[in-house]
Image 1 (cartoon, rainbow, N blue to C red):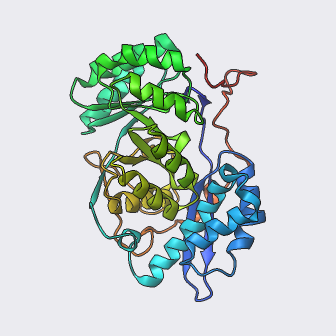
Image 2 (cartoon, rainbow, N blue to C red; image 1 turned 180 degrees about the vertical axis):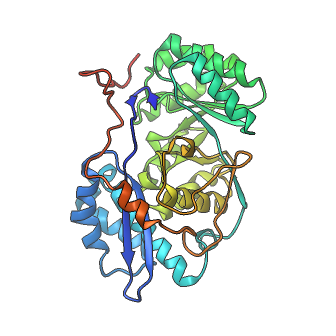
Image 3 (spheres, helix red, strand yellow; image 1 turned 135 degrees about the horizontal axis):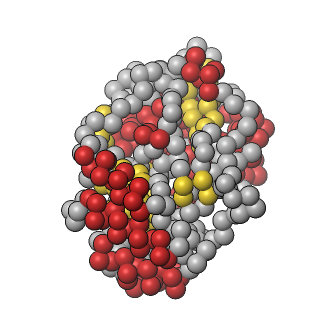
Length: 366
């Protein structure tokens, strides 16, 4: 999977199995991009979690931060989410309720899914877009951020392939300078993007504020919006029209619910970022989308790119939608044989390119 920051040859996820004193099993999953994640999980999050009740999601998150990780939130959130999700799964099972019913109830029963396009070749990406459209997809997300000429060519190819009506999102992954962002937004506007995602570096909120004022294209923030504090800063600054949430990068499902509420308070719609999630996180995403009123946009999804899963039966997209699980907790069953089969002892990188030794991404790139 090619993107502006490298080439992803695989995806590594970290899985947690939790057993309560009463014998209830809860499962959790998180994205695992760097070697720091399992280290924080083993040395901080699990020792902090042991002894807590499974309804103490807020206590877990704040306890991890209070262990010194308020200095290193981005190192702590992914590890914390794996345990926090397992706590919610066990809590839902104890209550006999699916998670969305514990977060305000069912707002929607089926969740719209966006088609995700990963290719730097305009011919291939256009063919992929047409294939997704034939399957009923009405929202498309295109990775750009390869270079000025490539960004225009890829966007044109997809828009011409799908026609004028479908929603087309453009994800830059922070590759643009402020000047390039202004120029390219002006050139991309005729293709009617639903939004441009993370055009500038993640910590440049002021730059995003200025860009919003200079373009008619809505600005979405993802890497800038990891934690609840990040979302608060975005809202205060007026830096985004759309916010992408991710429980793995927020520190858990409850933090994601709270972040959505902050956005809802000022009328900002939210959606979910995808990082190659397996069935546990996929289920969690669907529960979040079912319960959060302002999650009105199709959620990102990489299910089509996975070669396998650890839940049985796995999820299957039909008519560009996924149904919300109705069983207690996450509502899915882990296939322990698959878990053993897919277990690894190394982390597959996402930010470099094995085909280009010595190359590394620079932000901003152009």
